[in-house]
Length: 336
Ligand SMILES: NC(=O)c1ccc[n+]([C@@H]2O[C@H](COP(=O)([O-])OP(=O)(O)OC[C@H]3O[C@@H](n4cnc5c(N)ncnc54)[C@H](O)[C@@H]3O)[C@@H](O)[C@H]2O)c1
Ligand SMILES: [Zn+2]
Ligand SMILES: [Zn+2]
Image 1 (cartoon, rainbow, N blue to C red):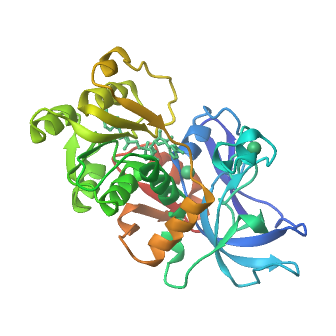
Image 2: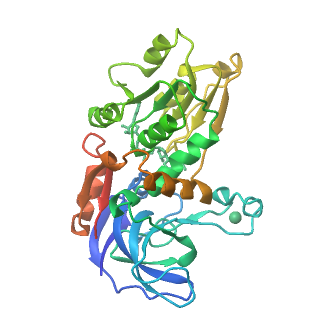
């Protein structure tokens, strides 16, 4: 079978491998579409703390059950989505039912081979059934959508709230869609990529190019200098870590979604006088994942405009090169 492999920092290539064999608790999934995520880019750049080469990355993928043993709820031909979290089941977080903050959380596609391949062996309990009316393509966005759902549900967002989203990457845009669904009023979103801002505008958000305007100024001028009720930091750099404090209203809530490559300085002194709260978020719960599938099934909104490219595994390297430039890519899917 054809595979896409991470060999070393900035070195990925198409290769071949024997089809994996499956254990009793596993299914062989024929991958339909697999998305490149920011985390895959972190691995690609050699900055991921756990991922070890050679690795078949990819944790955002849909597929069809190709082989499975007896006694499972799935059978050959079932369309599925993979829920890629692997928790230990033993730590305090797992025992408390908060498996997404497991002390030794692992991921299919990061800690073991994932979805950039024709076939992947997946524990059956990591499979979710795909509703008939959700396309294989859209289904590949279930995982990032679950991140957005978890983020907004963890936030204090209330109907009519003014929201500022720093970063119009796939996660920022999906947070915008979910915030809108949750009843947000004005939604401001910033980026430095005109291409991504154009997609944000088409989705109905007020898009601000932070290369020549300022989201802080824009939000303040639209709120009589009060600020946004909720700010989502989804760009992951020092500039936005400063802006999240400058945009927020007194007693507002900052939600940090970003995984920082370099730890930013957060000005706590500038937060104190306005009683600002700050929360962080990680992944999603099983219930968030269920809700992501449900929203895709209900066609509540269209995630398809997020998909900028669909490439065969033969163009594996090209996918990563495209993804390095936010000006020409958003969500890139491989179609093995
Ligand atoms: N909490 C979680 O579980 C979780 C899950 C997935 C992703 N993440 C993190 O969320 C972040 C966003 O993910 P993504 O996949 O959308 O990544 P991304 O890199 O595609 O998006 C980040 C965006 O920020 C933009 N940006 C850069 N500088 C900016 C600035 N000064 N102002 C405004 N925008 C700016 C970039 O152009 C880019 O479009 C990443 O840090 C990622 O690691 C967290
Ligand atoms: Zn991801
Ligand atoms: Zn655990």
